[in-house]
Length: 330
Image (cartoon, rainbow, N blue to C red):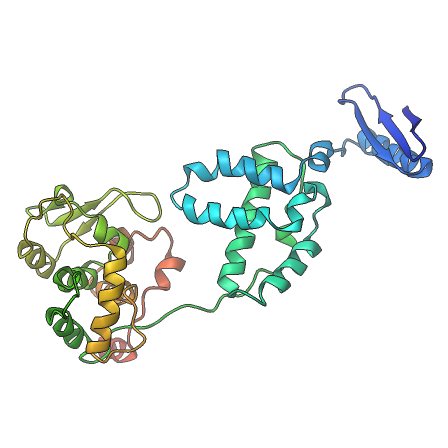
């Protein structure tokens, strides 16, 4: 049986002690609410469907975020970006609410407000980190709480790119990169960097991290131990790629490309301007390389080269031209 007792002038406490269950209690403003909760809870215990939500009711979103940042974010590769996102959440009023009190409608309102100031992709990533937090709360921390993000529509993102090198853009771009501009300190490395990106489909960050110890010209591959998805892979080298590497000077340091990401961004912008090329990003070279490699490799081989773990992600980078497919049809 439940025990109902008055606490002060404005509160009523209901406490249930039942064999086989840990004691549970909750405070209400009226005796009627306390009795209703006790009756419902005892019924759920009797039917074997009771779930203790006490911890979810006393733990705030803020406390969960702080724990997640310490225990989960710290082991992730993209920790810096995630921590920035979580710190933004800590300043939101929802952070002061208990996990149990947060509903899908709360996050739907938040989503609609957020979309007025940021791109859909940003709002989607903001919601995704909180969604995973709720999953961790339930599955790993034993907090009995449902994931309210699962009940709302995530912002629709339509930012897939299909930009490839068109016509003589490759020749114009490489020519512009060979024409070193005054003060363009990164340009010395840009021509081989771009040529390697087109040949290997490696990401810019991966290219800039390559050390000479990772390069095996005899076996024609580069070993990448630090990639975006956290797994290592070996990238095969074409004859053109090996020629690019053979032509590079061995720098005093261990890096193959002795330049920085910020320098690459500046040099890329200037080179595209000199080549009169618009709307092309460095990352588009990964699309270009993947589409070219797809003409030579089987699907499972291509995934090994690019590092994609599923075909859906790979499809975002494979953009065959209709005229090239027509030639295969004969």
